Amino acid sequence: MMKMNKECKKTIRIMEVCGTHTQAISKSGIRYLLPNHVKLLSGPGCPVCVTNESYIDAAIGLLSHDHVILVTFGDMLKVRGTSSSLSEKKMKDNVITIYSPEDAITLARKWPQKIVVFLAVGFETTAPIMAATIKNAYENGPENLFFLTALKRMEPILRFILEDERNKIDGLICPGHVASVLGADAFQFVTKEYQVPAVVCGFEAEDLKAGIYNLLDQIEGERPVSFLNLYQRCVRNTGNRLAKECMDEVFQKEDGYWRGIGKVSNSALGLREKYQRLDVKNKFDLSEEIISNPSACQCREIILGLKAPYECKQFGVRCTPETPLGPCMISSEGSCSAHYKYGRVIF
Ligand code: SF4
Image 1 (cartoon, helix red, strand yellow):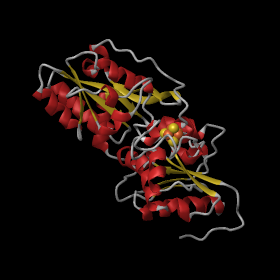
Image 2: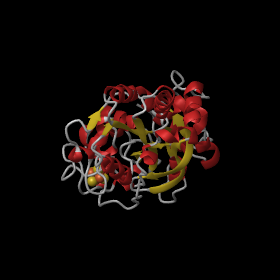
Image 3: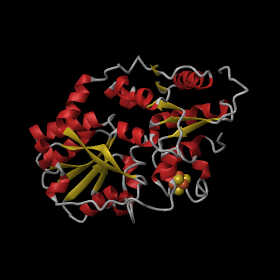
Image 4: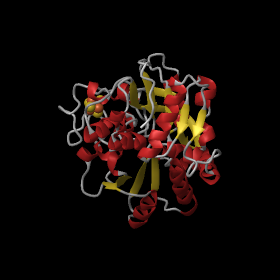
């Protein structure tokens, strides 16, 4: 696949921070083609995996109102709060899985006597369509549709990881989907400010191999650190102007709370004042009790790239996709789930 410098045995740590990259790397088997000293680490790019327990608790709390219906994407159902999950609390028709944010509007129109709450979770990839849905609901109704948001920003958590002394990252595969919205330029800071080689690449095995080759060529070839957009067929340097404008109109930056990590400044997107009446927290005076040290699950170490999934004692023993103990095993984009599904022998 690529010519390696066999003399170099220093461990090289390359992180990908997009759940779809995590899945694609595991599925393609690229991990096993690389020399032993090259480690591919999965970062916090799976939105389900990083959703704080307090958010799930708040959603479950809403179900105590019998006129509330929660609508959400399927992966959220199994994610546990401090004591239970939505799938455990689900009763007939009070939690509904949807496949598009527009479905939330359709369902709210179908049940005008109910309060329909959309659990809006994701990164800047899904934030524009969430913003468009919120804008549409604000301008055209229905009046009974509200939002519980836990939308995250990629840049602050990348800075958090790059500044972590314990977690020396030698190269970064930037999130391709987020880059298609924000633009490749949004990730230039990785090389300019942290002197870490970085690439934007796509999701096919060939895309990933090209990205990893480029990073290894820089690291092992001791070339000047550079940033490269290898995904130009989808990612413009300046991103998607309309998507960014829509996001910017509806959302503002605020502090975000990440499962197992805690508070990261300016890492979330909350509703601007104009749209606050659609925030279900105001409708029900809902406050989230932030949980910062959740459980024995080692998802914190996993999503920060400090450990590989197989290093968790529960991996494949008590924790499987059928019986997930932590969020990284729930979503198909979660690191533990991808490793479990496509192979357990790492490095
Ligand atoms: S294997 Fe399960 S318990 Fe262990 S870190 Fe992953 S999700 Fe958490």
